[in-house]
Image (tube, rainbow, N blue to C red; front, side, top):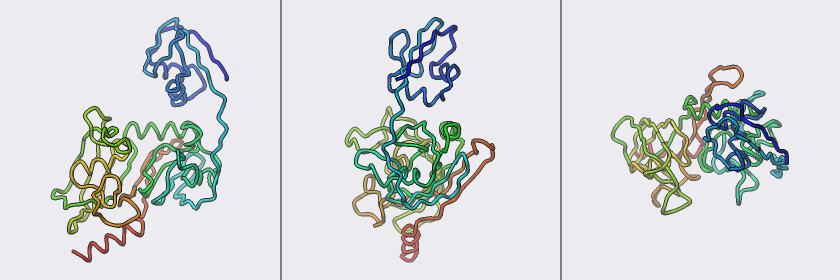
Length: 300
C-alpha cells in the first residue's frame, strides 16, 4: 500500500477538488478513495465535501491495484461506433451490464474486455469503461469510455444533463395528453429492497415524455431522461399509473409477453471528449418490440 502525506498551505475548498489539483489523480478516483475511507485529515476520516483548512495534515493510503479477475469472453457485441476515446454499444435485452453477485460471467463487461482492449479504470475492477447503465432487460445504446479522461468528460455530461438519452416505451393504458414531465424523487423502496420507488427523501428524478402512437389499452411513448436514477423510467411510469408493458418488477401480472419490459434506449448523444464535436446515435427497435407494435396495430 502506497501512502501520501502532505500539509495544506492555505484554505482552498472541497477536499476532492484540492487533492485532484495537487496530485496526478482524477477527481473521480479521489472521490472513490474518500468513499472507501482511505483519506484522513488530522487523523480523522472525512467526506468529499470536507472544506480544507490551512495546516491540515492529509494522509492517503492508496491500495495496491486489484488483480482483474473478470474474464474476457467472446460474446457477440454490436459496436455501433468506436475510436481511441469512446465506444457506443447496442446492448441486447437480457444482458447484464457488469458483474455482480450471481452474475460473474456473460455480462457486457466480459464482452467489452474481449472486443475492446483499452477501457477506463475509474469505476474499478468490475466496471471498466462503464459510465452509465441500462437495466438487464432494457435494450439499446450505452456509451463506454476507453480512458479515464474520456470517462470524466462523459460522466460530467451526464451529471450536467448535457448528454441526450431518449427511450421508446410501450406502456399500459391510453395516455390522453400529448406530452408530460414527471418530477418525483426516487429512492430504495421501504417495502421491497429490490425495488425503487417515489419517496419523499429520494434523489431528484426528472423524466419527460411524448406520445408517439396510441393503441387499445396501450400507448407508445418517447422519453427523455434529465437524471439517471436506477429504474427511473419504470418507477416513474408506474407512479403515474402507466407502467411499462412486460415489466416483471413494476408492471401488472397481466401484461404483454416479451423478453422483459418493452423499453428501448434508442437515441444517445454526447460531446466527444477529445474533438468537442456533438455525436448522436440511433438504435432500431428489437424484433419482438416491432412485432408487438404490429400486433397492437392490427387489433386496433
